[in-house]
Length: 298
Ligand SMILES: [Zn+2]
Image (cartoon, rainbow, N blue to C red):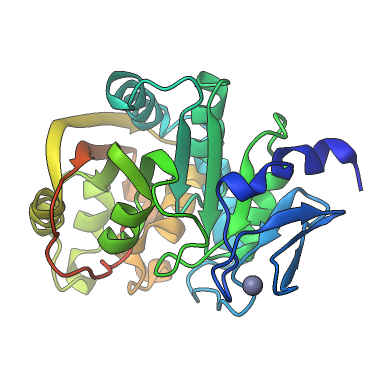
């Protein structure tokens, strides 16, 4: 294996624990290994699978990855990426070598942006989907991001290991987030805004039980677990060619239960991409009972 692809795991004991027995993991040749000999090979793309038994979500087919990659690279989410970078810059605790975890990294768009803007930081990024982590690692020219397949509900990370967690359109697990955050650590949470994809939702309204979308419940829940430091709505409306409208229609979870073929997508000429970016700091004392929220990928 290319040694440059292994280098990022040379001090893996700083962050990673065995997903099976929770003992420390160390780099051993081309694998991460715990004292109980549980062994996790580093894939040639430069990621490690720390959730070998994980099942893929039915919604995340290869085709939806291709759509997502194309949409992200076209720049429709650049204003959201900028807001995430601003939030990290303003609120991530000052540290010579901050550790930033992208929880639910998908194909790695935000993790790569954060690594690029913070080359001094250790960026860790995981997803439960092996396909997406594989693609993310393949596109990581920095070879610096510690990519892994991981289970949100049982993160293979040490207690108090990271300064900042990015939770961008992903499910949350507040108990695990609190456990792996250092004291004073922050979460940057991104949820769809009320107007996100509104043109598509309006078109599909006959098929949707709730054409209106509200993130209020998610935001309230976040505020019960973290001291909210900042909240910002970022919104842009793009003129959009038909191919991109089609890609959006197929990738947005807000339309996962909709028969896309029955929609007259040609009527949509523009689309609003809107998100709320919330920054919270780990609160002292006991949190409310932990639980997992539904995914919010746009
Ligand atoms: Zn083990």
